Image (cartoon, rainbow, N blue to C red; front, side, top):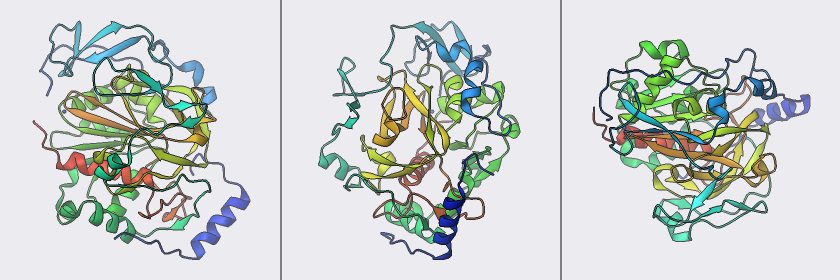
Length: 396
């Protein structure tokens, strides 16, 4: 069972949708070695039976609340005057002035560029000209004013999208060494199913197996919601990204592992979704994430998905936002996806899941098919990130 609370009516509707197969139109990280080991911040409490997030708030450690302290990897700037080192990732605690609570989009590319809110009165600003979307391979679509009709989407639709968005990669996808993509099981998200639909060979392990799994040949690591991992695992993930790995995390992994592994970048701001389908708007059309996608679509959120606050707008890029989610967000930002670099690698976090997010007995049921591409925007964006990680040359 998932944590979503389905009504009898919605279940009946979902079954009715699945009973009638809907055909979808398819368009077809190295930091220097060090023997010292520093203690990591305390890991967020483990979840058992998926309790309400409101019951977890009192257990959040001081490190999670103190947004003024920023832990920066010395692998990011090449300096070697850090106070402590963790594995091969050098880092230093710095007390910084309070940053923008919420998030901002940088205007321009210089370090001293001004920042402006993503949302002004809950109205999204245009953040990129049309030619930027075209250059990134993004099809301009209208803002979604109505919820899309759920659909049964077969694996052929996913693979047709891969073939069109990444034709050269599609020719060799089957020959990918499964160890190059490692998926860590979670309680709520099941990236395994979407990876299979996309035709991406991968290795699935349990959360307790991560410390015993060598990641030397791994290029992409996927941490499913809820992302409950021990301290040693967090250090291994940090080292993996620092030397060039790509890390994809989803939903509750934000509070459970992401903020501890890379403190000072993002955090949960205690807001949560209602488990509905919301509008989604791409605001930073970077090709690495949005090749072969659309500018506006819908986005399925899980019950109590964690809303996100950016602590370092100078380092974290917001990729997509939602007007509807902004109404439930304490910061009124409605952030759906963010990315940031660390050492030689990169992190992508989704508010929501990579999997279809459907009922267990309806695995092909997709609540948020995007126009033109047929699969979910969140799925296509994540797939682009995974494929980019596979094709990137990593110095080992």
